[in-house]
Amino acid sequence: MGNTLTTIAPGQFSQKNVSLFGFPGGSKAPLVCPSTNTTGYSGRFLKIACKGYAGGVSGGPFLRNFDGKRGDVIGVIGGWKTGGTIDDESYSSQFDADVIRLYNQAVNDYAPDTPNGDATMGSSDLWKHATGAASGTFHTSSQQFGDSDLIVKWDDGEVTLYPGDQNFGFHTGCKPDAPCETQLAKPNDVWKNYADIITAGDYAGTNAYDLLVKWVDGEVTLYPDVSEGTGLPTALDQHLPNEIILAAPHSVWEYARGFATGKYGGNQWPDDLIVRWSDGEVTKYIDIDGSGLHAEEQLAAPNDQWNTASLITGGDLDGDSNGTDPNHDLLVVWASGTVSVFPNVNSGRLQNEQVIESSSTWTHASVIALGEYGMNDWEDDLIVRCSDGEVTMYGKTQAGAIGREYQLVPPPAAARAATAQRAVRPDDPCAKVCGPELYRRSH
Image (cartoon, rainbow, N blue to C red; front, side):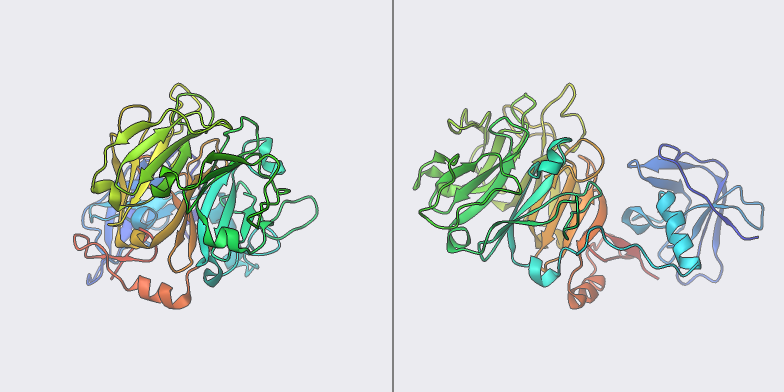
Protein backbone atom coordinates (compact mmCIF):
# COMPACT_ATOMS: atom_id res chain seq x y z
CA MET A 1 0.00 0.00 0.00
CA GLY A 2 2.89 2.35 -0.72
CA ASN A 3 3.33 4.97 -3.42
CA THR A 4 2.61 3.86 -6.99
CA LEU A 5 5.38 4.04 -9.57
CA THR A 6 3.81 5.85 -12.54
CA THR A 7 5.13 6.62 -16.02
CA ILE A 8 4.78 9.89 -17.91
CA ALA A 9 4.17 9.73 -21.65
CA PRO A 10 6.16 11.97 -24.03
CA GLY A 11 4.62 15.42 -24.23
CA GLN A 12 2.70 15.03 -20.94
CA PHE A 13 5.14 16.83 -18.68
CA SER A 14 2.53 19.37 -17.52
CA GLN A 15 1.11 17.57 -14.48
CA LYS A 16 -1.23 19.06 -11.84
CA ASN A 17 -1.51 18.54 -8.08
CA VAL A 18 2.10 17.46 -7.59
CA SER A 19 3.81 17.58 -4.18
CA LEU A 20 7.60 17.69 -3.89
CA PHE A 21 9.56 16.29 -0.94
CA GLY A 22 13.22 16.84 -0.14
CA PHE A 23 15.66 16.76 2.78
CA PRO A 24 18.30 19.54 2.51
CA GLY A 25 21.63 18.82 4.13
CA GLY A 26 21.77 20.17 7.68
CA SER A 27 18.00 20.33 8.00
CA LYS A 28 16.20 18.54 10.83
CA ALA A 29 12.98 18.06 8.87
CA PRO A 30 12.09 17.48 5.23
CA LEU A 31 10.68 20.18 2.99
CA VAL A 32 7.21 19.66 1.56
CA CYS A 33 6.00 21.73 -1.38
CA PRO A 34 2.28 20.86 -1.67
CA SER A 35 0.00 20.70 -4.66
CA THR A 36 1.77 22.59 -7.43
CA ASN A 37 2.21 21.96 -11.15
CA THR A 38 5.07 20.69 -13.26
CA THR A 39 6.18 21.75 -16.72
CA GLY A 40 8.43 20.19 -19.32
CA TYR A 41 12.04 21.10 -19.94
CA SER A 42 14.12 20.25 -23.01
CA GLY A 43 11.60 17.64 -24.11
CA ARG A 44 12.62 15.02 -21.54
CA PHE A 45 12.54 16.44 -18.00
CA LEU A 46 9.90 17.41 -15.43
CA LYS A 47 10.48 20.85 -13.92
CA ILE A 48 8.90 22.12 -10.69
CA ALA A 49 9.24 25.49 -8.93
CA CYS A 50 9.57 24.99 -5.15
CA LYS A 51 11.71 27.25 -2.96
CA GLY A 52 14.59 26.22 -0.75
CA TYR A 53 15.47 22.79 -2.19
CA ALA A 54 19.17 23.08 -1.49
CA GLY A 55 21.94 20.48 -1.64
CA GLY A 56 20.91 17.09 -0.22
CA VAL A 57 17.42 16.91 -1.74
CA SER A 58 18.42 14.60 -4.60
CA GLY A 59 16.12 11.58 -4.82
CA GLY A 60 13.16 13.34 -3.21
CA PRO A 61 9.92 12.22 -4.87
CA PHE A 62 7.47 14.05 -7.12
CA LEU A 63 4.13 12.69 -5.79
CA ARG A 64 1.00 13.36 -7.85
CA ASN A 65 -2.37 13.36 -6.05
CA PHE A 66 -0.74 12.94 -2.64
CA ASP A 67 -3.48 12.32 -0.01
CA GLY A 68 -1.33 12.72 3.07
CA LYS A 69 -0.19 9.10 3.07
CA ARG A 70 0.64 8.10 -0.50
CA GLY A 71 0.52 9.19 -4.11
CA ASP A 72 1.76 8.47 -7.63
CA VAL A 73 5.56 8.65 -7.98
CA ILE A 74 6.06 10.46 -11.30
CA GLY A 75 9.65 11.54 -10.72
CA VAL A 76 12.52 12.07 -8.27
CA ILE A 77 14.79 15.08 -7.91
CA GLY A 78 17.60 14.46 -10.38
CA GLY A 79 17.73 14.51 -14.18
CA TRP A 80 18.89 17.80 -15.65
CA LYS A 81 22.13 18.78 -13.87
CA THR A 82 21.01 15.97 -11.49
CA GLY A 83 18.31 18.16 -10.05
CA GLY A 84 19.15 21.68 -11.17
CA THR A 85 21.67 24.37 -10.31
CA ILE A 86 19.46 26.70 -8.21
CA ASP A 87 17.53 25.91 -5.04
CA ASP A 88 14.14 27.14 -6.27
CA GLU A 89 13.82 24.91 -9.35
CA SER A 90 14.08 21.12 -9.32
CA TYR A 91 14.02 18.55 -12.10
CA SER A 92 13.34 14.88 -12.72
CA SER A 93 14.15 12.67 -15.67
CA GLN A 94 11.10 11.37 -17.50
CA PHE A 95 9.75 8.15 -16.00
CA ASP A 96 9.12 5.88 -18.99
CA ALA A 97 8.99 2.13 -19.57
CA ASP A 98 12.71 1.80 -18.75
CA VAL A 99 11.99 2.90 -15.17
CA ILE A 100 9.41 0.15 -14.70
CA ARG A 101 11.83 -2.37 -16.20
CA LEU A 102 14.63 -1.30 -13.87
CA TYR A 103 12.30 -1.38 -10.84
CA ASN A 104 11.12 -4.89 -11.65
CA GLN A 105 14.69 -6.08 -12.08
CA ALA A 106 15.63 -4.63 -8.70
CA VAL A 107 12.73 -5.91 -6.59
CA ASN A 108 12.75 -9.36 -8.19
CA ASP A 109 16.55 -9.71 -8.22
CA TYR A 110 16.54 -10.27 -11.97
CA ALA A 111 19.78 -10.15 -13.96
CA PRO A 112 20.36 -6.63 -15.32
CA ASP A 113 20.26 -5.85 -19.01
CA THR A 114 23.44 -6.52 -20.94
CA PRO A 115 24.90 -4.40 -23.78
CA ASN A 116 23.75 -5.03 -27.33
CA GLY A 117 25.90 -7.40 -29.37
CA ASP A 118 28.28 -10.11 -28.30
CA ALA A 119 31.04 -7.84 -27.03
CA THR A 120 31.58 -4.40 -25.55
CA MET A 121 33.45 -1.55 -27.18
CA GLY A 122 36.50 -2.29 -25.05
CA SER A 123 38.24 -0.44 -22.26
CA SER A 124 39.37 3.13 -21.76
CA ASP A 125 42.96 1.91 -22.19
CA LEU A 126 42.04 0.90 -25.74
CA TRP A 127 40.17 4.09 -26.62
CA LYS A 128 43.02 6.33 -25.50
CA HIS A 129 44.53 5.32 -28.83
CA ALA A 130 41.62 6.58 -31.00
CA THR A 131 42.91 9.69 -32.77
CA GLY A 132 40.09 10.48 -35.18
CA ALA A 133 36.46 9.67 -35.97
CA ALA A 134 34.04 10.23 -38.82
CA SER A 135 30.27 9.66 -38.80
CA GLY A 136 28.42 8.56 -41.92
CA THR A 137 26.25 5.98 -43.61
CA PHE A 138 28.84 3.33 -44.41
CA HIS A 139 27.53 -0.16 -43.63
CA THR A 140 25.20 -1.67 -46.20
CA SER A 141 22.70 -2.42 -43.41
CA SER A 142 22.53 1.32 -42.63
CA GLN A 143 22.11 2.62 -46.17
CA GLN A 144 18.42 1.77 -46.48
CA PHE A 145 17.43 4.29 -43.82
CA GLY A 146 20.45 6.60 -43.78
CA ASP A 147 21.54 5.59 -40.29
CA SER A 148 24.99 6.57 -39.06
CA ASP A 149 28.04 4.41 -38.41
CA LEU A 150 31.44 5.41 -37.04
CA ILE A 151 34.87 5.11 -38.63
CA VAL A 152 37.72 5.31 -36.10
CA LYS A 153 41.38 5.99 -36.84
CA TRP A 154 43.82 4.58 -34.28
CA ASP A 155 47.33 5.74 -33.42
CA ASP A 156 48.91 2.55 -34.81
CA GLY A 157 47.37 3.20 -38.23
CA GLU A 158 44.48 0.77 -37.92
CA VAL A 159 41.10 1.98 -39.23
CA THR A 160 37.88 0.30 -38.07
CA LEU A 161 34.16 0.66 -38.75
CA TYR A 162 31.51 0.42 -36.01
CA PRO A 163 27.93 0.02 -37.30
CA GLY A 164 25.39 2.06 -35.34
CA ASP A 165 22.60 0.15 -33.60
CA GLN A 166 20.09 3.06 -33.69
CA ASN A 167 19.91 2.85 -29.90
CA PHE A 168 22.69 5.35 -29.13
CA GLY A 169 25.34 2.66 -29.39
CA PHE A 170 27.12 0.30 -31.78
CA HIS A 171 27.12 -3.31 -32.89
CA THR A 172 30.47 -4.75 -31.85
CA GLY A 173 30.38 -8.56 -31.65
CA CYS A 174 29.41 -10.55 -34.75
CA LYS A 175 26.39 -12.82 -34.75
CA PRO A 176 24.22 -14.24 -37.57
CA ASP A 177 22.39 -11.66 -39.67
CA ALA A 178 23.79 -8.75 -37.67
CA PRO A 179 26.52 -6.22 -38.49
CA CYS A 180 29.64 -5.93 -36.39
CA GLU A 181 32.93 -4.06 -36.09
CA THR A 182 35.01 -4.35 -39.27
CA GLN A 183 38.68 -3.64 -39.90
CA LEU A 184 39.12 -1.36 -42.93
CA ALA A 185 42.90 -1.10 -42.59
CA LYS A 186 45.25 -3.17 -40.48
CA PRO A 187 47.86 -1.35 -38.38
CA ASN A 188 50.28 0.35 -40.78
CA ASP A 189 52.79 3.17 -41.01
CA VAL A 190 50.94 5.13 -43.71
CA TRP A 191 47.86 5.89 -41.61
CA LYS A 192 49.92 6.01 -38.42
CA ASN A 193 52.42 8.63 -39.58
CA TYR A 194 50.66 10.59 -42.31
CA ALA A 195 46.84 10.60 -41.87
CA ASP A 196 46.03 13.86 -40.08
CA ILE A 197 42.27 14.61 -40.22
CA ILE A 198 39.35 12.45 -41.34
CA THR A 199 35.75 13.38 -42.09
CA ALA A 200 32.92 11.88 -44.10
CA GLY A 201 30.09 13.00 -46.36
CA ASP A 202 28.13 12.09 -49.44
CA TYR A 203 30.42 13.82 -51.89
CA ALA A 204 29.98 11.28 -54.70
CA GLY A 205 26.18 11.45 -54.58
CA THR A 206 25.31 7.83 -53.70
CA ASN A 207 23.72 6.38 -50.58
CA ALA A 208 27.08 5.25 -49.21
CA TYR A 209 29.22 7.91 -47.57
CA ASP A 210 32.72 8.78 -48.71
CA LEU A 211 35.80 9.17 -46.52
CA LEU A 212 37.84 12.35 -46.90
CA VAL A 213 41.40 12.33 -45.52
CA LYS A 214 43.78 15.23 -45.07
CA TRP A 215 47.40 14.03 -44.88
CA VAL A 216 50.19 15.80 -42.97
CA ASP A 217 51.88 16.99 -46.19
CA GLY A 218 48.74 18.81 -47.38
CA GLU A 219 47.41 16.15 -49.74
CA VAL A 220 43.63 15.64 -49.53
CA THR A 221 42.25 12.29 -50.67
CA LEU A 222 38.70 11.11 -51.24
CA TYR A 223 37.70 7.44 -50.90
CA PRO A 224 34.19 7.10 -52.39
CA ASP A 225 31.51 4.68 -51.21
CA VAL A 226 33.26 3.26 -48.17
CA SER A 227 31.50 0.22 -46.68
CA GLU A 228 32.33 -2.76 -44.48
CA GLY A 229 33.88 -4.41 -47.55
CA THR A 230 36.31 -1.59 -48.33
CA GLY A 231 39.99 -2.26 -47.84
CA LEU A 232 41.81 1.03 -47.40
CA PRO A 233 45.41 1.22 -48.71
CA THR A 234 48.10 0.54 -46.15
CA ALA A 235 51.25 1.26 -48.18
CA LEU A 236 52.44 4.25 -50.19
CA ASP A 237 52.28 2.32 -53.46
CA GLN A 238 48.69 1.11 -52.88
CA HIS A 239 45.69 3.00 -54.26
CA LEU A 240 42.02 2.13 -54.53
CA PRO A 241 40.67 2.13 -58.11
CA ASN A 242 38.22 4.91 -57.29
CA GLU A 243 40.59 6.96 -55.09
CA ILE A 244 40.52 10.71 -55.92
CA ILE A 245 43.17 13.28 -55.06
CA LEU A 246 41.42 16.58 -54.29
CA ALA A 247 44.55 18.52 -53.30
CA ALA A 248 48.16 17.74 -54.16
CA PRO A 249 50.92 17.27 -51.58
CA HIS A 250 52.51 20.47 -50.21
CA SER A 251 49.34 22.46 -50.85
CA VAL A 252 47.79 25.08 -48.59
CA TRP A 253 45.92 22.25 -46.90
CA GLU A 254 49.00 21.61 -44.76
CA TYR A 255 47.57 24.43 -42.62
CA ALA A 256 44.09 22.95 -42.13
CA ARG A 257 43.46 22.12 -38.46
CA GLY A 258 39.81 21.04 -38.26
CA PHE A 259 37.01 19.74 -40.51
CA ALA A 260 33.22 19.75 -40.17
CA THR A 261 31.22 18.18 -42.99
CA GLY A 262 27.53 18.94 -43.37
CA LYS A 263 24.75 20.53 -45.39
CA TYR A 264 25.98 24.10 -45.64
CA GLY A 265 25.28 24.84 -49.29
CA GLY A 266 21.48 24.90 -49.37
CA ASN A 267 20.88 21.46 -50.94
CA GLN A 268 20.03 18.08 -49.47
CA TRP A 269 23.53 16.59 -49.68
CA PRO A 270 26.09 16.56 -46.84
CA ASP A 271 28.84 17.51 -49.29
CA ASP A 272 30.03 20.83 -47.85
CA LEU A 273 33.08 21.35 -45.66
CA ILE A 274 33.89 23.92 -42.97
CA VAL A 275 37.63 24.25 -42.35
CA ARG A 276 39.47 25.84 -39.44
CA TRP A 277 42.95 26.99 -40.44
CA SER A 278 46.11 27.42 -38.36
CA ASP A 279 45.79 31.24 -38.30
CA GLY A 280 42.21 31.14 -36.97
CA GLU A 281 40.57 31.73 -40.34
CA VAL A 282 37.38 29.72 -40.98
CA THR A 283 36.23 28.97 -44.52
CA LYS A 284 33.58 26.89 -46.23
CA TYR A 285 33.65 24.78 -49.39
CA ILE A 286 30.36 23.73 -50.99
CA ASP A 287 29.40 20.92 -53.35
CA ILE A 288 32.60 18.93 -53.01
CA ASP A 289 32.77 16.14 -55.57
CA GLY A 290 35.24 14.08 -57.54
CA SER A 291 36.40 17.12 -59.48
CA GLY A 292 37.66 19.04 -56.49
CA LEU A 293 37.10 21.42 -53.58
CA HIS A 294 34.86 24.23 -54.80
CA ALA A 295 33.66 27.73 -54.02
CA GLU A 296 35.64 28.67 -50.94
CA GLU A 297 33.90 31.29 -48.82
CA GLN A 298 35.35 33.02 -45.78
CA LEU A 299 33.24 32.69 -42.63
CA ALA A 300 35.79 34.26 -40.26
CA ALA A 301 38.95 36.21 -41.05
CA PRO A 302 42.22 35.13 -39.42
CA ASN A 303 41.83 35.78 -35.68
CA ASP A 304 43.00 34.69 -32.25
CA GLN A 305 39.60 33.46 -31.03
CA TRP A 306 39.27 30.63 -33.54
CA ASN A 307 42.80 29.55 -32.78
CA THR A 308 41.35 28.34 -29.47
CA ALA A 309 38.76 26.11 -31.16
CA SER A 310 39.98 22.66 -30.14
CA LEU A 311 37.43 20.56 -32.04
CA ILE A 312 34.67 21.17 -34.59
CA THR A 313 31.96 18.95 -36.05
CA GLY A 314 28.79 19.44 -38.06
CA GLY A 315 25.24 18.13 -37.71
CA ASP A 316 21.55 18.93 -37.46
CA LEU A 317 20.95 20.13 -33.92
CA ASP A 318 17.65 21.90 -34.55
CA GLY A 319 16.00 19.17 -36.61
CA ASP A 320 15.20 21.34 -39.59
CA SER A 321 17.78 20.48 -42.25
CA ASN A 322 15.32 18.17 -44.01
CA GLY A 323 12.63 20.87 -44.12
CA THR A 324 12.50 24.47 -45.21
CA ASP A 325 15.97 25.27 -43.86
CA PRO A 326 18.46 22.69 -45.13
CA ASN A 327 21.52 24.16 -43.44
CA HIS A 328 23.37 22.21 -40.77
CA ASP A 329 24.77 23.58 -37.53
CA LEU A 330 28.41 23.83 -36.39
CA LEU A 331 29.39 22.56 -32.93
CA VAL A 332 32.64 23.81 -31.43
CA VAL A 333 34.56 22.68 -28.34
CA TRP A 334 36.83 25.53 -27.23
CA ALA A 335 40.09 25.17 -25.33
CA SER A 336 38.44 26.83 -22.31
CA GLY A 337 35.93 23.98 -21.93
CA THR A 338 33.03 25.88 -23.47
CA VAL A 339 30.86 24.06 -26.00
CA SER A 340 28.91 26.23 -28.40
CA VAL A 341 26.70 25.86 -31.45
CA PHE A 342 26.46 28.11 -34.51
CA PRO A 343 23.01 27.29 -35.93
CA ASN A 344 22.16 27.13 -39.63
CA VAL A 345 25.54 28.01 -41.07
CA ASN A 346 25.08 29.27 -44.61
CA SER A 347 26.71 32.19 -46.31
CA GLY A 348 28.54 35.23 -45.06
CA ARG A 349 29.64 34.56 -41.50
CA LEU A 350 29.25 32.56 -38.33
CA GLN A 351 26.56 34.10 -36.14
CA ASN A 352 23.99 33.49 -33.37
CA GLU A 353 26.43 31.50 -31.27
CA GLN A 354 24.71 29.58 -28.45
CA VAL A 355 26.73 28.25 -25.51
CA ILE A 356 25.36 24.85 -24.45
CA GLU A 357 28.01 23.75 -21.96
CA SER A 358 30.85 25.30 -20.00
CA SER A 359 32.95 23.06 -17.79
CA SER A 360 36.60 22.22 -17.27
CA THR A 361 35.62 18.62 -18.00
CA TRP A 362 35.26 19.50 -21.69
CA THR A 363 38.91 20.51 -21.86
CA HIS A 364 39.56 16.75 -21.87
CA ALA A 365 37.52 16.12 -25.05
CA SER A 366 39.94 14.70 -27.63
CA VAL A 367 37.75 13.37 -30.47
CA ILE A 368 34.18 14.32 -31.38
CA ALA A 369 31.67 13.45 -34.10
CA LEU A 370 27.98 14.15 -34.70
CA GLY A 371 25.77 11.51 -36.33
CA GLU A 372 22.33 9.92 -36.48
CA TYR A 373 22.71 7.24 -33.84
CA GLY A 374 19.25 7.45 -32.24
CA MET A 375 15.81 6.88 -33.62
CA ASN A 376 15.07 10.19 -35.35
CA ASP A 377 16.22 11.42 -38.75
CA TRP A 378 18.73 14.04 -37.62
CA GLU A 379 22.48 14.06 -37.05
CA ASP A 380 22.11 15.27 -33.45
CA ASP A 381 23.90 12.58 -31.44
CA LEU A 382 27.34 13.66 -30.22
CA ILE A 383 30.15 11.16 -29.60
CA VAL A 384 33.01 12.30 -27.37
CA ARG A 385 36.26 10.48 -26.64
CA CYS A 386 37.95 11.99 -23.58
CA SER A 387 41.66 12.05 -22.88
CA ASP A 388 41.35 9.24 -20.31
CA GLY A 389 39.71 6.94 -22.89
CA GLU A 390 36.12 7.36 -21.75
CA VAL A 391 33.63 7.37 -24.67
CA THR A 392 30.24 8.99 -24.26
CA MET A 393 27.25 9.53 -26.52
CA TYR A 394 25.11 12.62 -25.92
CA GLY A 395 21.88 11.62 -27.63
CA LYS A 396 19.57 14.24 -29.13
CA THR A 397 21.89 17.16 -28.51
CA GLN A 398 20.18 20.42 -29.41
CA ALA A 399 21.23 23.89 -30.45
CA GLY A 400 20.34 25.00 -26.92
CA ALA A 401 21.30 22.04 -24.73
CA ILE A 402 23.61 19.05 -24.55
CA GLY A 403 21.87 15.70 -24.95
CA ARG A 404 21.18 12.75 -22.69
CA GLU A 405 24.39 10.98 -21.67
CA TYR A 406 25.03 7.35 -22.67
CA GLN A 407 28.37 6.03 -21.46
CA LEU A 408 29.78 3.63 -24.06
CA VAL A 409 33.24 3.12 -22.56
CA PRO A 410 33.74 3.84 -18.85
CA PRO A 411 36.71 5.85 -17.62
CA PRO A 412 39.49 4.24 -15.59
CA ALA A 413 38.42 3.64 -12.00
CA ALA A 414 41.07 5.97 -10.60
CA ALA A 415 40.07 8.78 -12.93
CA ARG A 416 36.41 8.25 -12.11
CA ALA A 417 37.07 8.62 -8.38
CA ALA A 418 39.17 11.74 -8.89
CA THR A 419 36.57 13.29 -11.18
CA ALA A 420 33.82 12.77 -8.61
CA GLN A 421 35.77 14.92 -6.14
CA ARG A 422 36.55 17.81 -8.50
CA ALA A 423 34.39 20.91 -8.11
CA VAL A 424 33.94 22.85 -11.33
CA ARG A 425 31.74 25.89 -10.91
CA PRO A 426 32.62 28.42 -8.22
CA ASP A 427 29.17 29.95 -8.69
CA ASP A 428 27.51 26.59 -7.92
CA PRO A 429 29.04 25.48 -4.59
CA CYS A 430 26.64 22.56 -4.09
CA ALA A 431 27.64 20.88 -7.35
CA LYS A 432 30.31 18.26 -7.87
CA VAL A 433 31.08 16.84 -11.28
CA CYS A 434 30.67 13.14 -12.04
CA GLY A 435 31.32 13.31 -15.78
CA PRO A 436 30.84 15.94 -18.49
CA GLU A 437 28.27 18.31 -16.98
CA LEU A 438 26.70 15.57 -14.86
CA TYR A 439 26.06 17.27 -11.53
CA ARG A 440 25.18 15.73 -8.20
CA ARG A 441 23.77 17.84 -5.40
CA SER A 442 25.95 17.29 -2.37
CA HIS A 443 24.96 17.13 1.28
